[in-house]
Amino acid sequence: MTKDLLINFLFILLSLCLVQMVYLVKYVYRLEEIKGWVIGIFPIVSLILCMLLPVALEKSFIWDLRWIPFILGSLIGGFRLGFSQLLLVLIIRYLQGNDVGFYVTAITHIYIGLLAIFLSKYYLNMNIKQKLTLSFALTLFALSSSAIVSIHIFHVKIDSIFWTKYVVIHIIGMFISTLLWEVIQTNFQVLQKLVKAEKLQIVSHLAASISHEVRNPLTVSRGFIQMLSEGEATQARKEYATIALQELDRATEVINDYLTFAKPAFDIEENININEEVQHAVNVIIPLANMNGIQVKLSLVEHHHYLAKGDKKKFQQCLINIMKNGIESMENHGEINIHLDYKDTTLHINIQDEGAGMTQEQINRLGEPYFTTKEKGTGLGMMVSYSIIKGMNGHIHVTSEHGKGTCFSIILPVQAYKKKLISNTLSLT
Image (cartoon, rainbow, N blue to C red; front, side, top):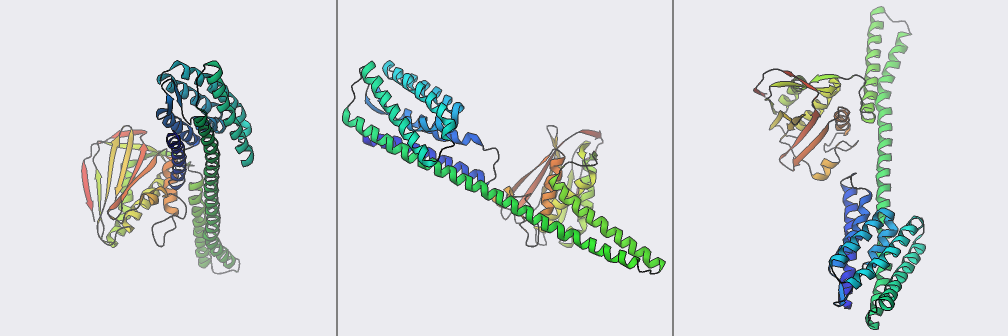
């Protein structure tokens, strides 16, 4: 019996390990969809395993370590998780049969569960010593209540030696489980602080980069304006003024690039003919491809010119950034294939290269400032590209195989289309 009780306790430890793994996966892969429901893994999985593989004293009664996850889950998760656990316990115990055992379970778990749910709002604000004391007290109260109800109401005979082992293992199990849960929560809080620290570091890098990029054209403009004030010839003054204006425009463009990341919405929104803009971006990128010995293949196999909402110039910038990265990922040979496809009211622009490829961890970090796989890259181009597509209510899906290439799929909602029969495949070199 002691061995079976210890196996029950291993089920509880297993579920705690699962929670820790999910938290680590959430941090490593930046999975924002994994949120508060993670805490439900520990009590729910533990309850199911403990009750399906219980320690049976005799045919008329069943014992297991369900009190540990039941009490901790109610204290940690509050009403929603506590009520879900109570319902789960009653359903499983009813299906296991035996009226006496079910009645004991129903009586004890209902009022212990309600008590734990009531105390949960205080439990979360306690320190570790107070939490251990409360969980210890609730465990003793629950075990005592079960014994009293079983012996005095339903006249169930309990072996005193086994009961002592049962209580001891319960107390030790509750102590260890409470400590492990606090360690897991503390580790997760540390990981969250690390994420915030990374974001603060990114902000500092952005501030330094903006000040550096904007200072250069402003310094040039100041110098030429100073020369204008010194009374040069008319033609020279015009040249100085032109250069000063160009540099000021460049400073404005730098600021706009950073604002694109911070605020994806566009000041000018228009209908963009996707086919035409892709063709234009390909024409722009052809000289760079020729310099690197790369063949560009464009495939437009559609019967309509599809339109999407956005800023035409920024969309071109996004396409050129992604195509340029694909070309630079290949070493003086290979192909880059651009293909348009229409699926379920969305337009897919697939840009496939034959470059070095990326790992899944690198893919998950694409779009972060100052993350790049290139030796001299800054990551700002890809950051801006992701923001532009997000501002068009689309998203970018990336698939890659290390050593074989990467495919960027830009997925955009289609606003309308112009009917125009085209069916061509262009090979551009």
